[in-house]
Image 1: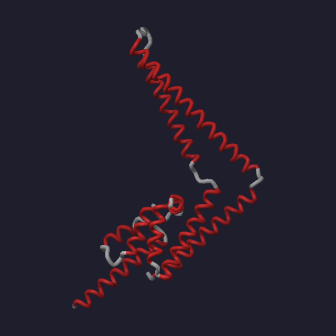
Image 2: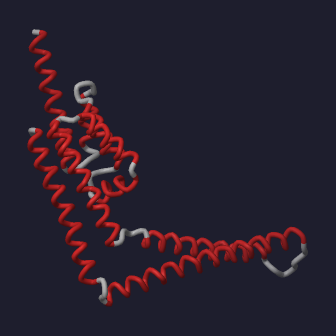
Image 3: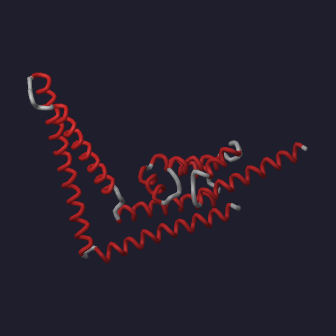
Length: 221
């Protein structure tokens, strides 16, 4: 595996995500006035209404539980099983919370516009990576690794691009920059944490490290 092969793979990935963004933009242009877009807007409003309703429901249940606890502590309520009532209220509260969490997880799915932004962000990341590797600009590589950790939007882009976790991608870049100083097993372990061109880049680092060790051994002999 040569560095030129990695650069070619990076360019392919850059083009892929740029093309994805372009296709999604075309979809938006064609469906901006369609029934489907109106339906999506209505669905978003209903989700927002359900969220508000769930918050109010939770607040009401909490108040009821507090009132029942006060009654149990201060008054004699013969014939009323307060513990049983509390159990049912807590069960309702738990189901409401579960429904709210499920609703919020659905609403956190990326919209088409979000995906366009993230795909372009990822394409730009690959463009910077390719340029830094071609020029052997290690300072730019270091800045790019720092950017992966500090830019939340880039972190999300890396995750939806199935490259790996942002921390793992930044770690892979740092390992490549310090490939002559780190242990071989560190690079081997990091290879399993990333995908695509980043995995190839670490394999190149591993090969260069083996070559450096071989040269050093030859000189010593």
